[in-house]
Amino acid sequence: MTTCNRLYDGLLRARVDDGRPFLRLPDGQVWSYAQTLAHARQLARVLAGQGVRPGDRVLVQVKKCPHALCIYLASIYLGAVYLPLNTAYTRNELEFFATDAEPALIIVDPSQRDAATTIGAKVMTLDAAGGGDLAAAAEAEPDDFEPVSRAPDDLAAILYTSGTTGRSKGAMLTHDNLLSNALTLTEAWRFTADDVLIHALPIFHTHGLFVATNIILAAAASMIFLPKFDANTIFENLPEATSLMGVPTFYTRLCDDPRLTADAVAHMRLFVSGSAPLLAETFAAFEARTGKWILERYGMTETNMITSSPYDGERRAGTVGFPLPGVAVRIADGETGEVGVIEVKGPNVFTGYWRMPEKTAEEFRADGFFITGDLGRFDDDGYLHIVGRAKDLVISGGFNVYPKEVETEIDALAGVLESAVIGLPHPDLGEGVTAVVVKHPGADVTAEAILMEIGQRLARFKQPKRIIFAEALPRNAMGKVQKSLLRKAHQKLYLNAQGLDSA
Ligand code: MLC
Ligand code: AMP
Image (cartoon, rainbow, N blue to C red; front, side, top):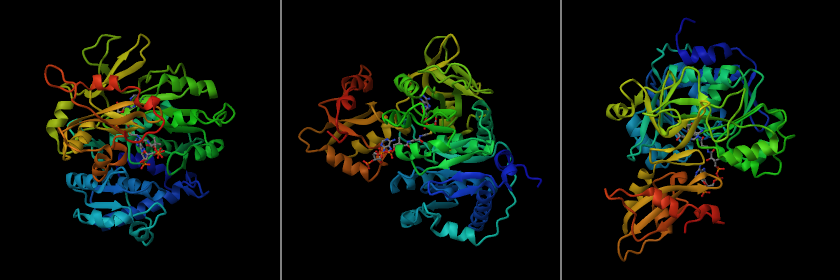
């Protein structure tokens, strides 16, 4: 083979005839590397037959299953641009992404076929058991496919992140962005072919797709591939595993479980947390129960992973460790110890937002550093502390929710004068999405009615867990809503509450 395709060359080429296990499923099924890649090549043939060409977007909104992962791998073979979407997104949201990205092919659950067909692109289907017309078509194909050459700067994926203005932006990630980060992390976290990772994250975001999956591929290791996080299944599978990656909610839920003991995790060599702040209390509670330090890392869809706690040496609670090798991190206009916006530059950093050159230009400094919108400081030992966000963003159970997007939906409802959406400390999700709503005088609007209306348009995780009615929103002299005052006024809402229904 004479191809040059960085992800294929870096992650797949050496695995082609490899009989070692790649995926272990809860029902005992095992997918070897050879079998997985053979299926990916069959899928690549199907996609090519549907007219997908190098550089074309393949939009995928399907349940987590081995076949779904194979679509990602097929996109690499084909040189297509993989565009996964959260399965929680509504039809309305799917329509937006499909219109913006203009995919050559949309792959959805069979139950969504009709909705997707109205969007206008070609549609194929896949369900969690491998049913639907995609896998069936693949089975009829030979399993050879020559990987398409791609330059290191060619796009491999687009992942949408919502914008602070409410408009979602597609982060364009190249072969080099993904491969450089995967190789750096594999080395930093010492992954080898002997590792078995418990994979309980979704595969439509950076954490579950690029961090977890690409590392496993790079190391020729295997993963116990679970449909979602469930504490029982995690404890059942712990004896077979060496490592776990999760959002902080995974760790608070594990800490709440009496089965979490030093014995239960004695053979585990690594617990990784990221995508949202890991509270120092959770780090300490986990250590007290197990004797293990969680390794925390910090990243973004746009940048892949930026920093990590050290593998050897002190993993300091409340910090996200040091910049990864090859990644430059600085605090804007800051001296050591001062708080400022975190900026980053390196081969891991994306090339820009899909068809949004002005937005892209706004988020980069002239010298190429990307402005993360997170506030941080380096301590005297060089550990990075994330102390807040300059951007208006709520992170609920590791999912980003942009208040502006939710406010726009609520404000459009009859009887609503205005709203402010904030994140409040939540014992399970880290932050609970909360809406403070001001009604028009005399309007008869209830929390239930608001939730029902926006439920048609916004994914479940974006919907407020509580709605609080107020007479007015606090504003500063410039007329800007003072969300910090709202957060302060309601900070105990979920910490005192028994139920999480709307108030
Ligand atoms: C589910 N629900 C959520 C939610 N997840 N609501 C708010 N926030 C969330 N994160 C909804 C469900 O639809 C359900 O609604 C109700 O809340 C209770 O669900 P649950 O059974 O308790 O939730 P569960 O399925 O257990 O999911 C929780 C979770 C999951 C934390 C395990 O959300 C998860 O896997 N999160 C990981 C997200 C992730 O991968 N982030 C990485 C982004 S990449 P109802 O009312 O219908 O019952 C990134 C870059 C980086 O950020 O640095 O990594
Ligand atoms: P996303 O846009 O989904 O990629 O989310 C990226 C954001 O998640 C970052 O900008 C941070 O605000 C947050 N994040 C990721 N990892 C961490 C972490 N370890 N600690 C605190 N925040 C984090």
